[in-house]
Each structure stands twice: as structure tokens, then as C-alpha cells.
Length: 409
Image (cartoon, rainbow, N blue to C red; front, side):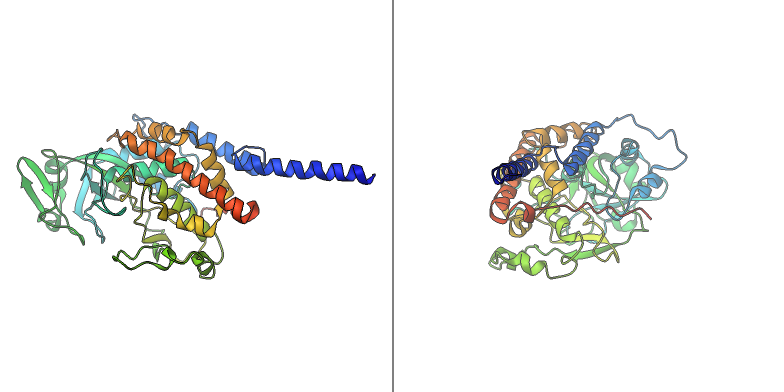
């Protein structure tokens, strides 16, 4: 082959490689990886709409047994879950056998046991849908509807790391009081004609109860993860100090990610990329309160970062708290699969998908329209951040191929 032909051939190869990179950055399905991601996206779209009339008819298992079998080291539920609507319907309607104060924490919640012995966490409504939580990005009470919306967003993003959540109305007089513990009953009170309770938690106060409308209280119900999967709590490496005038190291040290990469479990395995996925998820929902996180116990860093407790989200649709994205813009790394999914959700597809998913829920409309619009705006910010990383660090250093799928036990 003549030198001129070789030069032309080399130029053509380089052009094709450049085009491949552009296609990947634009979410095109030209590579094997992105074709696989596109198929997964289409499956998600096909399963987005859940039937409100769904019931389990083809199995002798309870909905709780089915959901417990879904859980694995890298997912709370699998990609295809034809029983999901039926399980969520059971969560929203099953008889309450017992009610108690919530587990440890800063925010008001109740621990319920449903028919069949299934534990769930009930978070009561504190705000109307259009209420704007002012102040710090982590201010205010927990938002029950945020838990519902975050669960469905987790489905849409393809992470599948959030426990199952559904909205539910409970009658405090007929469903809760007859089965409540003395400890929970002692926190009940009346405000006018409305029944209220204030529970037991770090910030729970008799002067700040959650109140039903009459006896009917709106809330969210989160399915307790199976006891065979014990949780381990970790301090988030990008956690805030929550002290005025005192910054965490990541807030002033732009090279902080390099230090994190040297610490277990972030020095090997999928955990650092999980943290970055979570930063994207939290930025989209406006959650600046993930000071700790949970994984499965004794996992050696291999299990997922579980997306528990997303209730400090969707508080202020006008606030885009960029500091939530610090793991992304300081490490300049993101999974290829995450990047491909984000690109497929551009141009209003994200808000449209979430709006569609939320029509199933008993407490819909779950979100006010400004919060849905904020998702699309924030997604554009995430994509711009990744593009900036590609420009400064290069494509191969930014987009990381990591598709760790551990088998179920």
C-alpha cells in the first residue's frame, strides 16, 4: 500500500473513531454498549405505566415474598417486574396489623406492620404540593410525595436501587389507633376537628404535629428491605457539616476526589461510581441532605449504594443546588450506561416519563408541574457538566464502562 493511501486510510479510521465518540456523546445507539442501553431504555418505557387494578393471580406467593426475592447485591428490583403494580397496590391497601413510632432519625415517621407481617415506613403529609421550602437546600420537613417521585425516577434512570414506595391514605381512627402501641398513641392530639400525631424522633415536637384532614391522613409507604439483607451505614464522603461557617473539605479542595480514590471502598469496585450516580439522582430531585448512605452489610464494597430516604427532595423547584453534583464535577467520571440513559431522557423526555409513571399512584398528582419542569432543566445541567469533563479530561477518562452485575444468591 502506497504511503498516500495509508495516510488516507489512517485519516478515515480517525474520522470514524471521532464520529463514534460524537455518537456516544449524543446518546446514539451505534456501539454494542449503547445498543444494549437502548434496549433497556425501551423496556423501561414499556413498563412505565402501571395498572391501578393490578392483582396477583398467578402465584401462591404473597406480594412481600415476591418483592423480597427481587433484592440482590446490585438491585432492589430487577429490570422486568410484571408484578410491580400488584405489589405497590398491596402496599397502598393491605390491612394494618400494628402501628408504632418510627425507627431512629430526625424526622417524623411511623412504623407499620401490614397484613402478613410486612414492615413499612409511613411518612405523613406535611406540605401542599405547591408549597415552596425556602432557606437551605436541606431545610424543612420530610416530603412524603418526594419519596414516591424519587422511587419512580430511580426506575426511569435504570438504577433500581430505591426501595419500593407508594402513596397511601390511612384513617387514623379506624386503621391506626386500634393497633397502635401506647408509645405512638401518647403522641396523638386534636387540632380543631383534625386528628394529629407527633411521634418520636430527634426533631419531633408536640407543637409541630402532622395532621390529617379530619381522620384521613395522606402519606407515603416505603417497603422495608428483607431482614436477610442487613444494612451497613456509611458516612458520605461528600457530606455537609451542617454548621454555619464550617466547610467540609470537598467544599474548598478541588482535588478532593483524588483523596477519596485512595480510601476504601472507593479505591476499588463500583462504589465511587455509585456515589456519582447518586449525586446525579440527588441533583435532579434537589436532595442536598445525603450525609450518610447505606449498602448491604459485609459486602466488601461490591454492593450498591441504596437510595434510601429521599424525602428532603422536591422542596424548591427554582433552586438548582449545583454543589450536589460535586462528586461528578470533581471526579469527572460517570458510567457509560448512566450517560447513555441521561441522553435518552433529554428534550423533555425525563419529565414526560415521570409524569406518566406517577399517574398510577393513589395520591396523584404527586408533583406540582414546576418540579417536573425543573427535572428537564437540571438534566441539561448534568449533561453540560459531563461534556465539560470530556473537554478537560478526555472521553476515555470521563466515561467509564462498568456494568457490574452480581448474581442473586
